[in-house]
Image 1 (cartoon, rainbow over the protein chains, first blue to last red):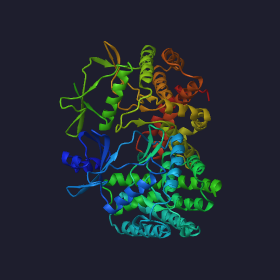
Image 2: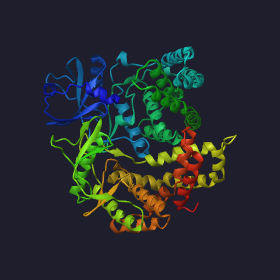
Image 3: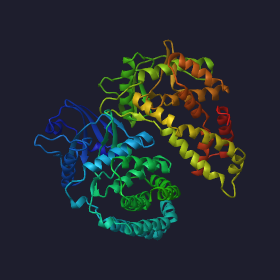
Image 4: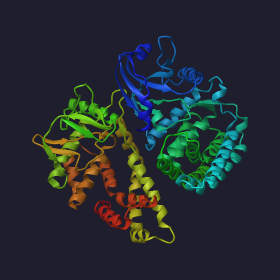
Length: 332
Length: 280
């Protein structure tokens, strides 16, 4: 059974739960890992939350603040008790308003342009968010990347020790050294910037996949799904966005140019920030993520799926090197 | 009539809402998706999806000659006209393809560039070598069109108008009934530039008939029902002329998939040459 379907099968869909949100639900149909509800109050999204309530409350409160200056973010429906969530059968559920629009398409240069500008406005609106240590990566990126290098070295040890190496192990071992080298390069570059002195942070979305960005029917850009949000320099979000957009656009420098040119139209990046952005982009995040997912078994994929993803992500290296070379020439 | 379908649940829901919009705008040439006895649009049995459709007698409509191409042009133009402006209701997803094809062209072109300078050529690379320059030149010429400001403006226009395309034009797209030509299913439909649909029809027509004149035939037939501007014609020509089959084969080759490349190369080159309208 596909993983989304498995996840949705555990949802409790009953009238008593919906009643707590003052909703009468006529229909519920699955889309990815949520249910779209047709209710007497319009279309809503039902989602199960798998992280601490404290984090959820931070997200909810932050979005309320951000909405004052950037209204195009997901909105929570409150329960009868005035809470943005419900605990039902020991699970936490939220109900969100549905935004009318379509998912962003990063292959489309016009969408890229509009999302970049919207992201800048979103960051401007999120400058005065209260500090929350659990979600903060402010000044911690060097340490974080060093830990990731240690992880890669650990995974290398594990793979080397396997007597009967899996296909994943073999491909991983062929590519790990060069990726560790790249990671160290990123750390060295970051150490050379003023990152550790940067006190300014924003509320970063941190998961700017195209399906989390909605091009509204009202021509506004909406940001959805803040589960992975963090507090850090805004270029962390930009790096996240650029990495995703590059994959959808054959790693062309035009992709980065469109994003940064349009972001700068709203809120100009400093030279220091662009240096930090470069360091973040240097880090081979895709290779790290798939290796971590495999060796720590964080995802329920089968072996073939893991291998296919690793091969694909390892192949990004040359393209990424080439585009970062161009990036350096143009932006630094 | 119960029918098994190979698509996702959201596509069925989307197709039904698009169908309602099409009917409202006077386009009824499609097999109706109906609500079943339980009031649902689909049922799931043994992990398979089933929908309830109207029973329509007919045979698959093959787009294989001038007559059938002209007939299909009319249906296609009417579909484009009736579907334009469609906005799915809240909570209903729509397939969005604006810019996707040109991005795929970029990726394939990048792979094609990589193969040129490979040392110790394999037999496949050696077979491709005599044609590499010509294919590359044609692909670059096409990409010039898709990088132009005029194209970006046309893309923006398509997005503002919310043009909807069928996206798939094959022998399974339509059936010929006593009442005329009916679209069999619209699950793959979504936002896209209509020039892509027209280009797909032209490509299919040229490949079936071997005649490049199909380009002019399709355009003049389509324009009987819906106007196209001169830039549209340029984009359609570019889509048709892109050496898609050869470049796709090279991409697959570079990914190391196990297929008979040399045999497929011959076929790919032939098909792409048939569709070369640029004379480059």
